[in-house]
Image (cartoon, rainbow, N blue to C red; front, side, top):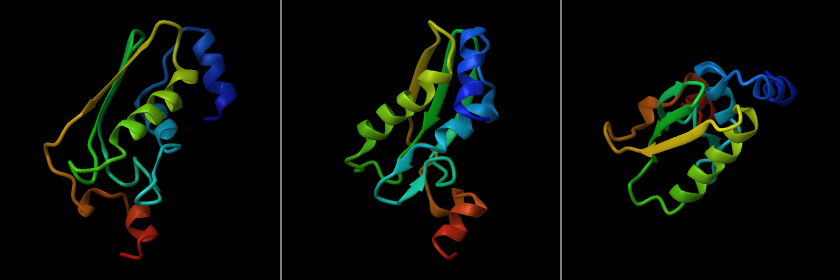
Length: 113
């Protein structure tokens, strides 16, 4: 789905569903890994509703210095697609700890695994 279609949904007060949210989050790149956060396996949970979108995610390491920047980019990627007044709740979680096995097939291929 493209940005125009999302903007149309936004003006109709229809929130995107979980798959749409995950597709939007593919725009967010972890600069250290050079890969989007979905295929990297950092997005653990997505709940989409008319009043709130919840994203539970992690970083590759608790010591990641770019966590706040990535979370800001998540908000920026989602905002244009959400109905007016829809809140974005991003929760940074550490359980389960991230590991390379959590990457998608595309993510593993990106790194030649």
